[in-house]
Image (cartoon, rainbow, N blue to C red):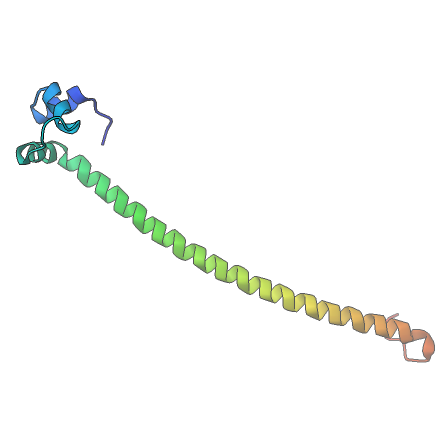
Amino acid sequence: MLPYNDTEIGKKLNVDKSNFSKSVNGRTKITWVFLRKFYSAFDSELEAIQREEAGSAQKAVELETEMEAMKWRIHELQKEWQRTRKRLSEVESTVRALVGKKGKGTATILK
């Protein structure tokens, strides 16, 4: 809804500004007649707000689903990184062992 002041809303509802103010501030009861006028005057804006909120809710669900997929992918990448680090450590150990045996009559693999 556009930002309206009490005078503008009163005009849209065909009621005096002070009567509108009394209703929304609780000094008089909001009646069915008032509600019908209100919904009649602002129906299209209220529907637009509902559509926007529904779209926002749907977007939030989509983003949450996407975020969960990203968390899973990060988890998988972390596991792969750990496996890679372990393999690299094993290769480094093997290379160190081979280089250490180089001077003891073992065939040289690295030149």
